[in-house]
Amino acid sequence: MRHHNTVFHDLTKHIPWNQFDRLVAVHGSDHRVRRLSCKSQFLALLYGQISGAQSLREIEAGLASHKARLYHLGAQEVARSTLSDANSTRPSALFEELFAHMARRAGRSLRRHLRDGMRILDATRIELSPLCGGWAKGAKSVRSIKVHVVYDPDVQAPVTALTSGPLVNDITPAKSLEIESGATYVFDLGYYSFDWWARLHAQDCRFVTRLKRHTSLRGTQPNPVADGPDADHILADQTGFLPLPHGRDLSDPVREITVKIATGKVLRLITNDLNSTATEIAQLYKMRWQVELFFKWIKQKLKLSKFLGRSENAVRTQIFTALIAHLLLCLAHASQTVVPRLATFVRLVSLNLMHRRPITRLTEPPPPDIKPGQTEMAWL
Image 1 (cartoon, rainbow, N blue to C red):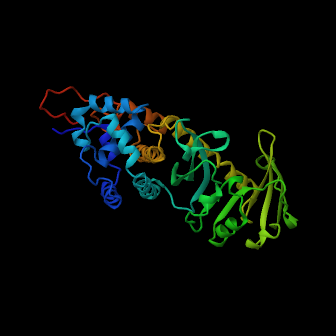
Image 2 (image 1 turned 45 degrees about the vertical axis):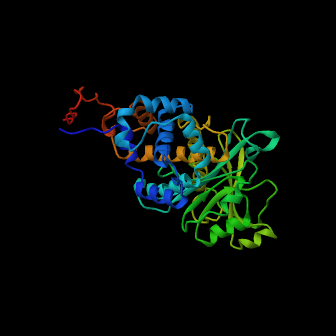
Image 3 (image 1 turned 30 degrees about the horizontal axis):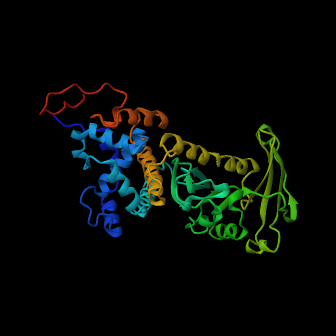
């Protein structure tokens, strides 16, 4: 005889609660709090993200309907007004730092093989309600917030995430990131900075990006273009030096590869990798679209199209809670082999979130009903 926890409880086992408690103490988030602890606030927001709740009222009603199953989670019922106040006043830095800690751990545990890591840099703009304050005001009075992500395609999860105002250039937060020596960085024109490329090169990193139309290399030497069906999209390959004066930051030669993509558009790729084939470089840049799929995923599956608050703190709290929810789902998906596709697994988790059944057996019939006071039979 044994008790089965809910699917939600199994998900939360991947949360480093000792680190969470440390961050709560550091930020003083539970200081003089009597009605809703940070842990209950966090679990309520996670419940809303994974269950697909569209409002504070839905979170309140959903948790109230599962009141008997909140005890083992360490959670409690919430009033929507109390949760709204907590989202506005509890520092969002708590959830940002928790995500950073979990992302580092998830990257190590999800990686199935060892090799030089690949990092895709990109940013997305998330539109907000017109009722949000001036902190989110951007061009043409559109209110939004930008989410900057360093994405690991091997584990299909972000390793770093930052938020900024809608008018901040992508390269600005990128320059504040810690560079991983030996990694491969892939990014688009939003990170056009010769001095930052030089920093990547100095730390033995490989980078692949695009050249702007007005940029021409100096002292170019053509490289042979391989024949064959796999290389018919490679139009040219040459080695040269970045133009002066800014090119002095990167004095070593770089490589320009001209590629024609399926739509007929011609791209000029630039890289400091002088050894890989042109086709391999083109494939690396093509992988950049994986981060676009990730942005689409979190906006659609984790309900970032509608926010539960209007203040900057509430919006940032919800964004980092959504990113943490994504990590939890990735970790839980990797722990089982029954459901191979992540999208199918997420749908099953959402449908069974508060059911008492092992998360590794979501496709099997539920355990038999039991009488009050009895425990559930272990599945055979």
